[in-house]
Image (tube, rainbow, N blue to C red; front, side, top):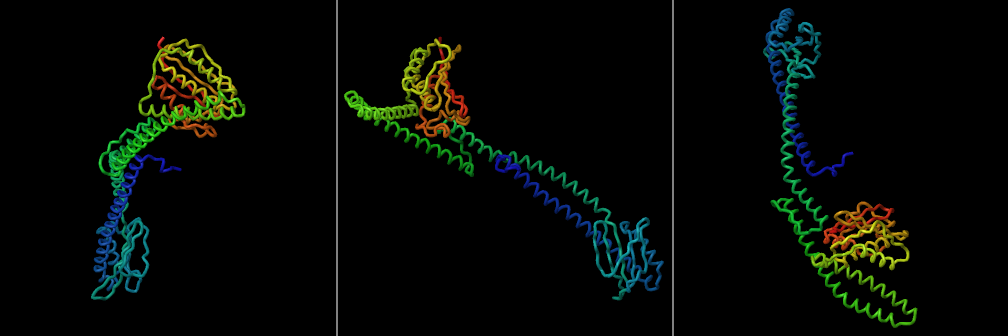
Amino acid sequence: MLNIRNISIRNKLIWMQVITAMLVLGLCFAAFVISDIKGYKERELRNITSIAQVTGTNSISAIQFLDNDAATKNLSNLERVQEDIVSASIFDKTGNLFASATRPGVEPYVFYAPFTDSYKFDDDYLYVYKSIYKNNELFGTVCLKAELSQLEQIKSQKFQIAAVLLLLGVALAFLFAVINQQYISKPLLSLVKVMKEVRRNENYTTQVPVEGTDEIGILSLEFNNLMDQIIQSNQKKDEFIGIASHELKTPLTSAKGFLELLNSIEQDQQNKLFINKALNSINKLQSLIYDLLDVSKIQAGQLQLDIKELDIDKLIDECVQEAQISTTTHIILRDGAMANSIVFADKNRIEQVIINLLSNAIKYSPKGEKIYLHTLRTASKITVSVQDFGVGLPLSDHEKIFDRFYRSKEKDSGISGFGLGLYICAQIIKRHNGRIWVESREGSGSIFYFELPVYN
């Protein structure tokens, strides 16, 4: 069954106008045809009634002298006067048949009482009953049956004209509807396009041109106002995140230093256990604060990169060793040939990307035992991939997973985090003129890739 809500506004507008035009034209043409048919019947009624009046007047003498032949002759001559008359009869005042005549080849028609002034239409014939009077004395009744010979012709002709005009009217209505819908659907589609771009690029500075003061103009204006409010809200949020992260960094560093000092001098193993747990919590909080600071810098366009020559193989080996130390549940294996490449990059930031991808691979494959880090060198780029065998990602999350604060509902169930790590990784790789993406299926693990240009 057709769902109207699935039809575009453009097509809805076109069909609404076309259907409205069809209904209006159909009613007009119906009235036009009915009016012509009614006019024809009225003309025929007046004509046949007049003939019946004249016939009755001319037949008075024949009725008075009981001259049936003369009356029959008068009735027979009616066909010469009006060829539509197929049957005629005269009844006397007592209701007995006095004379009758029928067109040759036509079956005689029997008229029935009461014989008073009246008429009747059926599909093809008109029946007229006209009383015969002289000096207010009733002599009898003339009964005529007339064929409506032109009725079908009128119907056919008028319906043909109506059909042609209806088709022409619908075609013009469709043309005007197509032209008219552009003033409604085009601005709406433009607004939808901008909304999609804003959602995809998170560029809230995009504005929609406001044309006119109608409802669409008001909608565009309110959309622009909403974008301005989002920009202001994001600015305030980023300012708060930046200030809060910066203010938390100093006391957190001091607390961490004191805990490390306390851990070095504490001899009681039970106390050292508590201190290490506190240090682990401090490290998690510190990592979050650094992520928030990075996000704040990225949003403000202040993420500085220290670009230098970098041996990518050496960096990858260091990252694998560091990640392996942090886990006892997984084995991290380097796969593929050595890149033997020098890239121009910020060592700390690329290290941050690799460590983040390895940490995520461990975190999101709790039942997996192996993590593979693969490198592939081509003439102009090096591709690094991290593969796990964990929960995987649904296809709908492949692009969104790199958005700020985005967390997959299926993937992140029961796992803490703010959805900042992959966003920061994506921004770092983007600022290195590289590319980052993911290949994954639910329940089959994930492979995260990033590319960097090489120069040797």
